[in-house]
Length: 178
Image (cartoon, rainbow, N blue to C red; front, side):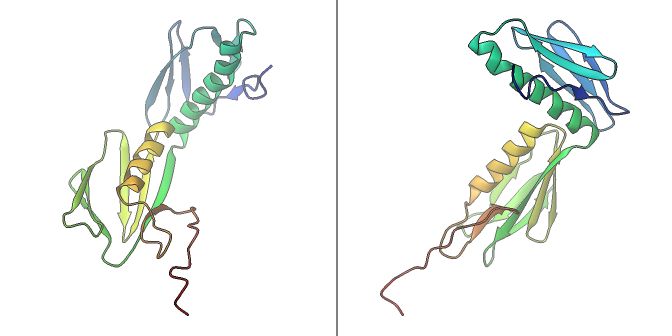
């Protein structure tokens, strides 16, 4: 039995879960999320808990069991608390500024980089710090990864966009210089 898949999901107050044959819908104070049910996986509601089971022990169903439980758990957490990722911009002259619903980056290129923020994700800027937040964990992580990919941190001076909790391994530079 899957160690993660067999754990029940507690439904906090203010969150409603609707289980259909094909979809699971989770509504909360922050919004609503919908996920399709994977074949070979059964989802049921029992006294304020979501129980995820599989119909047999085939390898594909064993793999999907824990994944389905985690996806539903992330939906419940997302509509009740939300998710956020923090990014830092390091480097002389590197800046970010909101421009309507987009972000305008000055990252040392000959041009400004414009990033269109997708719907369902909010980005807050404070000096050279960014906070990406939303209710969908996958979408928040994807947006943060796309922003980081605009200018990855380099190992010599540490210039670029990095996660707030990321540690950059620094290199010493030229060895002939003392």
